[in-house]
Image 1 (cartoon, rainbow, N blue to C red):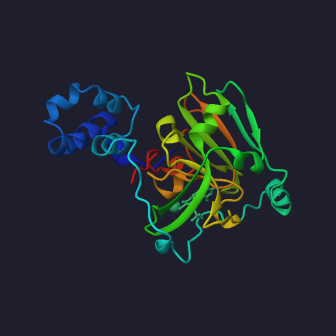
Image 2 (image 1 turned 180 degrees about the vertical axis):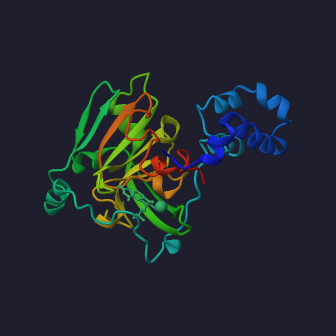
Length: 260
Ligand SMILES: Nc1nc2c(c(=O)[nH]1)N[C@H]1C(S)=C(S)[C@@H](COP(=O)(O)O)O[C@H]1N2
Ligand SMILES: [Mo]
């Protein structure tokens, strides 16, 4: 299972109370009030992670990530993780310029969708120059253009019981064939800078950066930004997907909410 013995070992509640207490002296009146605050109760019950809660407290989830100018764009944007999925189906799609690729949108929606790149390009779009921060300690600035995820989800009709958007990718990560996947909540999905990017630096999204479609969720770390997206699913939760962490790297112990 995931490698978080320090939190698991002392018990999630006690760990979070201790951590939240430190935050509380800075931001709230004190520990006593914290334990009766309904938002804190949500954290303690595991519905919301500490970093997600802290970001909400400091800036609110609607705040925009900083945006930069054309002059700031990195000359060499590093490619990380998978750089060319060796999946056979993916390779066949790539050979044909992704003309036969379709984004599937399913799960808890009223109207499941199958969208071509052409159709995605017709949807409300956003362009943004942002900084990508990888957990490994490097950052690059790039320009991204893509379909805004919120309006796309509205078109599919999100059912009221849906809480998460899960992204299934084409690339296998290890010998077991486990594929990259990620998940975000609906707050992140409807954030104005959350897009499904099909362009990078005014060019068609290149394969090393996730062609034909990759997620940009600018308030979080690089590993949340699923590349090579094949399918999107609206779900109630993610405990029953893969190892239950909500993402490939989360299953190895990374935080699910990777706020920057
Ligand atoms: N499908 C898929 N998505 C992925 C990864 C991956 O290996 N496979 N790596 C993640 C990590 S750790 C980072 S930092 C970014 C890297 O994106 P880039 O290659 O455009 O720099 O993609 C993320 N999304
Ligand atoms: Mo990363």
